[in-house]
Length: 469
Picture 1 (tube, rainbow, N blue to C red):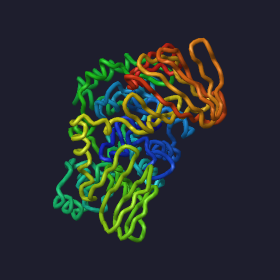
Picture 2 (tube, one colour; picture 1 turned 180 degrees about the vertical axis):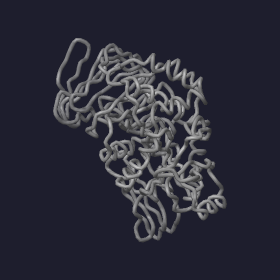
Picture 3 (tube, rainbow, N blue to C red; picture 1 turned 90 degrees about the vertical axis):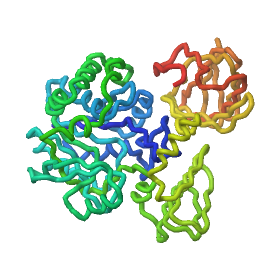
């Protein structure tokens, strides 16, 4: 029996400004109409597998739940109180999987990869199953096509079953070293995907990382239900060492095996990888959005909100969002992470806050702001219901653009239709709901001395959120 485990806790900082702390890349629709997470869920359909277990950060729980709902698939949502890397996350998944008395094969998949040939992926999983059942910890090694310096490599040892024993793991190499590895022909890219029996992984963890296993066992023992989510015990989980499965287990295990994967794989780990994962035009350009490229070659242009025009340039990355623009040479794609770190150190909000903020009831986007005012575009899903709340520092005007709003202000509850508006005074108890069958769209104008999202006193909330969520 295969139990898919989808790791959805990454941040994807190399894809800023598309990917943000509040909206990391696994939730973005980068290469198709589905998000990377939804593509990962969809490719499980060719396997004889149990419903997936999604492991993710509690701050992204409503994003995970909504995208799982959109996929139409069942699944378990497990929340980590903070990121502790992959080894503890997989340990908790293994412990949870064993609670039923079963000992499944865990198919561990990052949520943010692209696989163009799903049939080849399914075939590689089938080749790995006998090895995992025999007690091997199996990783999938991507057949390299060029000397990539952004991936780790796996050196293949003696053949075993449908794969090879792992001879060694190789850190991200220099260009010269990567070229040598490619020419040698016996190395594969480290994909970060695994197939391993739950009990085998836990026994290896007990031998190699007993403190981590103890912390994860306590975190699972302390887990509790919260709506549709399973929250791991916070204190215990946060006490676990933060290690990847490679460093914690795979590099020290004598039962590590690798199965080749030749399936048009990409981890979309940079804008250069995003360019390579799509089909360029005759000039080698990839354009998403309203882009006009003249005398431009081998460039990636992503325009989210306005026209982006280029003239007489080559090998560029241009990414436009509502609050930020990135312009970089393609050979600097791997350095975006360092740029984001510099922005964070400078106290900028752009690396963290996404222009479009998702909530369990819908979303909102800031349109304009200034001294003592802010304008937002708010969308409430059919049946969506904001908390009963008050603000101590701001008043609000709501103008309905489409749909019908049910509004509560203190003791009054009334309907506001298209082209109508209402006013919420400072300190008034209020709630917004969408009782209709279509999305409710409205413009909110805030005015006051403080306009932060944490100026919310919630008295009732069906989503059990904190004040700033």
